[in-house]
Image (cartoon, rainbow, N blue to C red; front, top):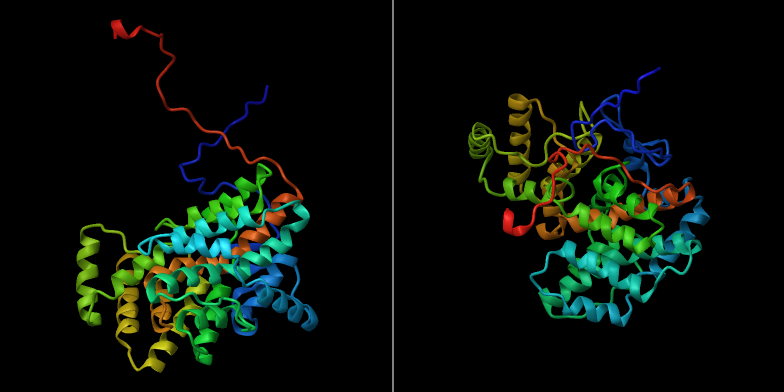
Length: 376
């Protein structure tokens, strides 16, 4: 008789293949990333975010006509129902913006429910268009005391976001940098939030529930929240020397330095190399190299002392700072981008669905006999 050997996983499903996908590859040869077969380096250099979102949702790069139609639909979907605006106004000014997006997504699911799975691409486009509207309507209402009209005519999602945030036409370099960052964050295979979305989808739940769950997963500092933690570290130091001294002390105390290493990449994170270029470009344009210089020194220290490379979150922090984006919005921007990848995975999961239900090794007590309370 052949004995079946079950290999015990060390935890966190590390190394476990949990399914198949045609959407992205992560960590090929230790550093590669592709969306639908296209290298992230080529997409970041040549594509706009709308082209990438279309690629993820529909499987191919759009023709000029398809891209124009897609952009037109995105613009048309930016407005918010009055009932949703009231929900956003009723949320506390001190709420975490990720909680705002989570609540906004859930509320929109009540106001515009998914009638059938045939609506899924329309809902994906609706969320792609309206997440920046939700986030910045709430922010501007509580920060500035105004009710903005989020239905701008900006052809790009990057331009729409920056216009709503700053109430003016964005600088072309800033809009390009924002667009590239959205491309880099758009998709990353079976990461924690995407896997959360696929698990919810596998129960045949609705689109909004799957996305709401994904937002909750992304909120954690070990996933999307790392860019906020990286910024909190970087802005503490007045110069690179102070940063090196402090980081060395942190390493001595075995403190975790956010923004370094990756669960899948072994050699480098290709997205980090791209956003680093933009972080430097934006700092040079602003005439303020302090944050970039501090970031670069911390990067050098971590490579020298721990052989760890930066991930996308690390240099994104200073790039977003120079775009005038508050630190509390860093992770919500992740949502505004990753909805393209989440939606693609929800659609893919539904196309060949099977309930996701792993097993667990029980490590609790052996079977015990019941005793009445008086005898315990």
